[in-house]
Image (tube, rainbow, N blue to C red; front, side, top):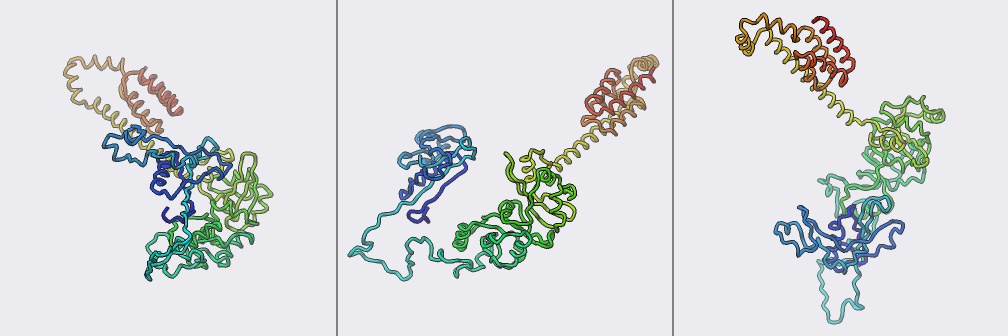
Length: 499
């Protein structure tokens, strides 16, 4: 605000509807600077549906407590985060209704807050140096030029830096300054020749982060409108510009032999309006084919009219254009053309965006496939771990029944003299762990029928026939049908062997 000249304007806008970020901020600035005022917004963008700024609001603390006035804030802890500038003090004096509030449901837009702040012009006296007034003269002091808050360099064409700024000044900056290129530079000749750009293409508005206009290895070529070009040129020694403009081309010598600059998808729509023979109108069917997997589309599968145009094209980037139809907008896609195939040279997200517009299912991205592979690997490890644990338990059970452990010794002492009767009873009423059970377990392990393999395997090891049969059915109906049928047949064979 200090840098603004009298009569100058500032547009303050946010993508928020929170009054603390909008009206409260503007109100605080206007209270501190009485030489500024809000400009009525009725004449701006008449087709934009807007609502006036609000003049009353509440302030909420982080714990959910609401306050209507600053005087209501009594808690010392709350006073650390709530200041008087957050409240609508003297809001009616500063015409906050001149602000614009844009709501999403009014015109299918995002939520925005917009206001125009203007610096008032001070009244000038007829004689700026009245009689008797002393005029301070100091040769060292610089006299500011009227109407120009900076210097008269703003009116010069500053394609090169001013004397006070040297190239060394930019050393240490992560971003080099922008330089507009000479329309007759060598790099533009190859771009114009390959993409068949018309003479009306605004080469004078192309800029890059390179001081040399004939540098063949400028990483990115961007474009700006004429007004933005003037702002950049007139402030290159005053403002450090991080990013601006629209990227059109990027240097990619390894992939393209005839033209070292590849057209970027973000600049395809703009550049296509100036392109000639490298812009191809395609059908919906061909566009869907090109937007398929990254393997590419063979040229002979395209429609005859399109095949005739692209069959003899050299390797490089072209643009496929699908005209608008109904609710489907026009689609411009950069396409990499080789001797025998074509494929969309765009990101996976851009490709899926176009596919959704055309009513097609989105393709799985590489990161989604990688995630699925990781999940599958994790699942297999869980199966292997569960099967291994189950196998160890079965082996322990088998060893304990054959060799005997502490519990079996106690049981033998308790049943001394009745071993033959007990063995006979067990043989008649219970199932013993046999080699057939081991065979079934190996089948379950090899087929990896489920992640929780330990549950059915434990049931297989039980002495109860009903539980064994339940385990068979569990595998049959919840996991792998083939494995379930095989296990069921094996179970039936076991029954026959017992009888």
